[in-house]
Structure formats: C-alpha cells, structure tokens
Length: 383
Length: 227
Image 1 (cartoon, helix red, strand yellow):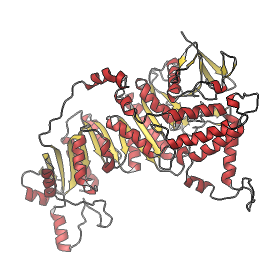
Image 2 (image 1 turned 180 degrees about the vertical axis):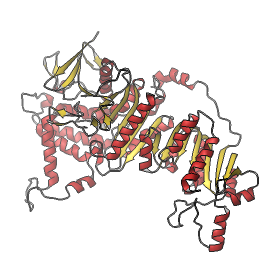
Image 3 (image 1 turned 90 degrees about the horizontal axis):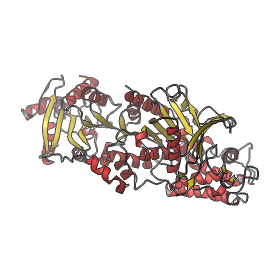
Image 4 (image 1 turned 135 degrees about the horizontal axis):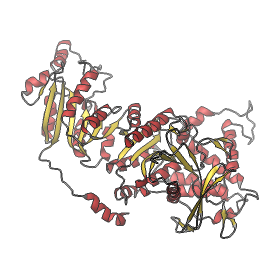
C-alpha cells in the first residue's frame, strides 16, 4: 500500500504531496517506486467540492500559475488569467496547478534524487509521457478529495494534458478548455524539438545527463534550445512589429557577430534568463513527452468507445490565426472528430498576430471567452 | 415590420414547428438568441454554427455549444442524422451552393427548417418592373453590389427545387409584410405574390429513421477490444 503525505516546502513556496511505495507505472513500462508532486492551490474549495479547476502548464511552465514565483522572483506565468477577479476567478473557483512529472520545480523528475541509488536521476530518469503526467495529476486530485473537477484548462503542452484528461478520466471532469493544441505533435514540431535537444546533448558539459546542481550545467546548449523554441512561439508579423531590423544600442552595424540587431539581443536574453530557471535534462524529457503525443488516428475511437461515460463532457477548443506551431487546422481536426460523434463542443479561432504564445499574452477575446464559458457552465451545473 | 421584429416573428413560428426535448442545430446562430429561446421553451439540446467571430465568441461565453466556422464547409463533419432538426433561418439566399446546403441539412438532420425572403413578393416585382432597377426592400435591404444575398429565388422556385430533390414540404408558413401569416400550400400563385417571408419544414420522402437499440451497451462490451 502506498502512503500519502502532504508537506509545505518553504523554499519553493508551494505544497508537495509524497506518494511513497506507490509503484507508479509509466506508459513506457518502467515504474517509479516513490512519486512527489509539487503544486499550488488558489482560492477556496466550496463545501460541495464542485468548483475545482486544474490548470495544466506548458513545456517550460510550473506550478506558479499566478502570484509570486520564488524561482524567477516574478509574477506567475498566467497571472493575467488566474487570480481574484481575473478571467479564471479564484474568488469563485479553487484553482490547482501542479508541476508535471519530469519537470524541474519540485515534482519527481531528472533533477531529483533517485533514492535507490542515492544519486540524482539525470539521464537515468525513465521516459515520461503526457498520459503519465495526467495520471499523476489524477492521483493528486484524488488525494485532495475532489471526486470531480469542474474544468481542466491548458495551452500547448497543457492542452495535450487537458485532452488526455478527456480521454482517460472523463468521469472526473465536467469540461476542458483546450488552447493552441493538437491531436498530435507534427513532424515540424518534432524537428524543432530535436534541434533543441541536439544543442543540449552537444554541450560538452551535458555528459549524458550526469551533470549536477553542484557542477557546471549545460547552459550553453539549453539557451540555444530556448532561442530556437522561442522563435517558434512568435510569428513573423509579431517579430517584425516588435523588432523590425532595428539595431541594438548602436547606430551602425558592426561588421561582426555581436548582437547588432534587437531581435538577436532579445533572443540571447531569452536564452540566458531561461537557463537560470530551467533544467536541461527536464527540457529533454518534456520535449520528448510532447513528441510522443499522438491521437491522430485513435482519438475518435477513444472518445466513442470510452470506458466511462463522456456524454456530459463539454469541450472548448481555441486556436489563434498566427499560430504556426499548432495551427487552427489542427484544432479543427479535434472539433470535427467531436462533432462527428455529436459531442458538446465549442470552437473559436482568435485573430491575432502574436503566434503560439498568444494564450499567455494580452488577448481580451480569450479572457472574455474563458470567463464566460466557465461562469455560464458553472451556473448551469449548479442550479 | 422592421428587421428585428421580423426575425423575432420568424423564430416564434420556427418554435411552433418543433416538439419538446429535441436535438437541434442552428446554422448562423449569431450570439445564441434562438438557441436560448428553444432551450427555455422546448427544453431543446442545441448546437450552433456561426461565421462571425465576435458573435460566436459571445454565444460560447453564454454557455452554448457553438462552432466558429462556415456552414458551407463545416456541415460535412456531422454524421448522418446527428440532429432532429437543423435550422437555417434567413440565410439560404446568402449561400454559395444552396442546393448542396439543402441536401446537407437533410443529411445531418431528420428534418430541416428553412426560412427565406420571397423574391416573388409583389413589391419586388413592381420595383423591377417600374423602375427597371434591382429591388431594395425591408427584407432585402442591400444594393446589388454589396449584398450578401447572392441567390434570389421565389417560393415557386424553392418548391420546384424541393420537388426535384425529392424533399417533402411537411409544413409551410407565409408571412405578409404586415406580419399576417397563412398556409402556403393553399393557393400558390397568389401566395407567391403576397408572401414576404416563407418558412418551410422539410424532410425526405418516405424517410423512416433507423432506430438502433441501446447502442451504448454494445459499445461498452466492445470497448476493451476497440481501445
């Protein structure tokens, strides 16, 4: 039998749940003997326990969805969406956000100690998938004594998790909000991830993932990986609007390889600040988890022949016009499948030039859409 | 009648054609007002499609199941007879391929409700006859060069098409410009002259829906194999 223990981590400023002797089976077939999940909650669970919302973070996100992030000393990654009187209103809803397994903000992952060998997992950490992440989240939700979440919300890798919830645990949720995601990680997306991984693995300090917090870390590789990825989160229009060909702190070009252009300087800054908060091995594992995600041919069957009833489930699918990483067409495939099965699905393509990252940025239409969807559906369920 | 009053009247009549507890698709659902009416009064289960981004967003935010999309493309994704009723209110004349749309309506719905402004109305006929210019009326208020209404047809035209496609007109209601309503089937020539707007309840000839009993149970049994 597994034993479950909650603690508060003061340094990480979050809660941690330990599942000891749990033998957590991963999709790869490997097992984790112990499991810990770092999470934060916001707002209050009501007496009926009907107002729980799980927010799933994207590739480089964490449990600090809103409020202060003690690692970056900045506001949480979705502070503009989640909080009191925000679109996902914590005066009304009980918001849970947990660090995915394989992550690097306190949950079981390559950065953590392998208790069997008493060394850091590093490159020995078993492969994790989106399905594994969601399975871990469902254990957390069970341990919080919530039998049914009102909603699971996520963008990008978070959207993959939301979709996985709808496939694996439809009886435990009322709706999902799926933003800028897809049924599968496309060849182009895998290709970009592979370039990022190669940058890390070719950093001489990486050493098959055996570096530790005390030694030098493969920061050069990780920052290049981040720079490449960051380009894919924007759009050409947004880059042009933001930077054009403007020069950085100079009037004339240098005829050298300094960061002459503002866009170069910006990417270098993105890379540099990223390595301060993220672990290179986690980046390898989590990008791989996204690459392995594929329900392109099985989604329809999974939903139609679901073990547990999913007729009650409402789906809100959102895409952005300028997102070329997870283009609208990919969202529409999900919508088409659900409509073919007469499911309760809504879909909106939001017009913006901000690219894939739009879901994290100032998009008033997304705010009103999410807020309206949550409030009206909550009212309908609880009247 | 002004435009809003005429749409309201239209919706009121559409409601009279539908039984309670039905599954309905509203094409061009706007911000969801007709769906709201049908849910409230008939306990209907509703889905909608809306081309306009703002309106679709509003409808979703009200809690309705709405797809932001184009009916001429997006109807294809629905399975045969997904709905008891499919409603196309005052938009058939704006469709690129009205005939294809009509057959799609009756593929995905057991019955279709279609309403449209009648181009055979006497005011329109006289405008063209007397002034020699394209008519502009209350129900068709656009000039020829900026109108979204690209296919003009009369009640007679519509009935001919239904006949050609083996579509049965189960009920038909005509409205005069003063809002007076009558049964279209009575005297076609005069009806085509006086009807300002028409509403039709359509189905296929000899169509009997195939009832599959307790599909759910069969699915559950096979679900292990299937997944």
